[in-house]
Length: 96
Image (cartoon, helix red, strand yellow):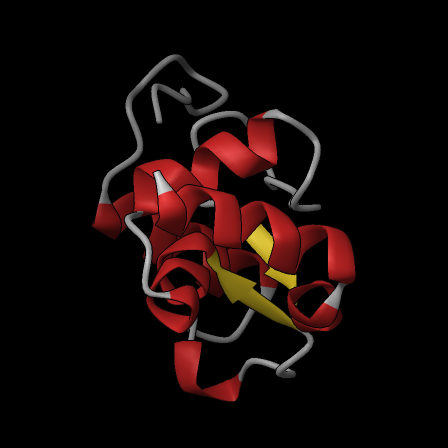
């Protein structure tokens, strides 16, 4: 993601682990998510469209999504999947 450490080094798995240990943060566990947000890849699989089409809906403002920082994965609120506007936009993607 092209982020640098405080001293200008690139982040590695070792540096991330050391930082988590120093700050007392637990290891990342994707299985322990709260279920309120899902990845863009899971959204695409849910609707049966490609990730590129799902991202296009995000960039158009149809599908609400956030990124922790630029370049990180997009996270979509689960409740947005049942939105009428999202369902209509996905149907248009499928029909083209």
